[in-house]
Image 1 (cartoon, rainbow, N blue to C red):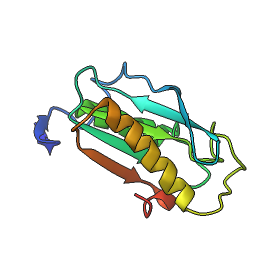
Image 2 (cartoon, one colour):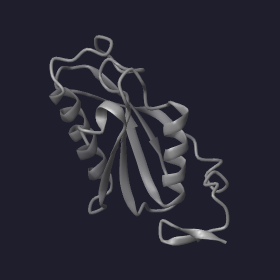
Image 3 (cartoon, rainbow, N blue to C red):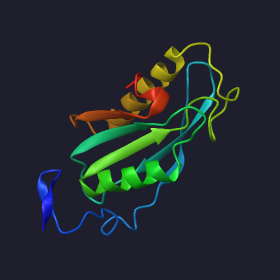
Length: 138
């Protein structure tokens, strides 16, 4: 038996066993304030989620990088609804490649996305996880 992770004992360190069938759904999108289409990805548990987790990728990345998929699956295994998007100008999102007028653009898009997801799951706690350039934003 390994140490407790997420409030329960784990039989192994692998979180992939119960989430092996969880697929990233990248069919969603929204329009940001500047009118650009922002490509979204979600990972959902089979049950009502305990919490909502937004993953913010780093500069010149996108939200379907394997490390984010692995993290999202681990969070789903803990009962979280995980969601992310490609920042404007990154990945499948529209906009000039990796160029924005201000970092506020990223903040606005994250807050818009969080608000949209909170409407689906009212009352659930929300956590933000940011990597690299987005660590300060979150």
